[in-house]
Image (cartoon, rainbow, N blue to C red; front, top):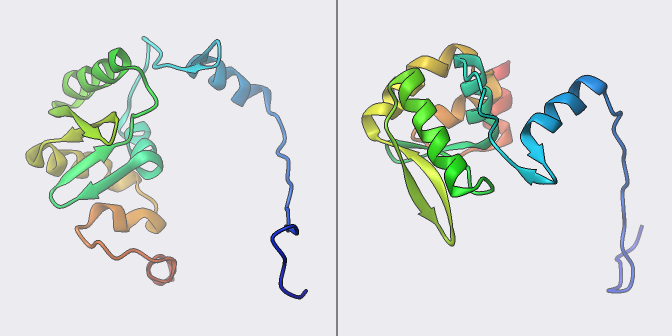
Length: 143
């Protein structure tokens, strides 16, 4: 294929199967199209690890959980769950115009101990302070 002009585009479309079990989970986290935190959320070490692999990051000595799309009330609820379930101290941190959760440096160490057994090799880079993360590095770890 030659170069594309501004009027030409290459589009790849795909679909996924809809599974009833995932639809049930969707309805727990979305009410009337708005993302929410269920009040009966059971946050386990594995669930916390999956959340971190998906929406977590590390900057310097602190872990961040990207909760920007939840309401302020739900973010405070998540903060309280982290403390009551795991003893983790987090606060709201402004990320541009939204907020996210930032764990204290000490709680970052504790959370790392809680989740590290559940982190798959591809995401080990998120546990380090190494700002350079590439797919090649992740593939090397898996070999």
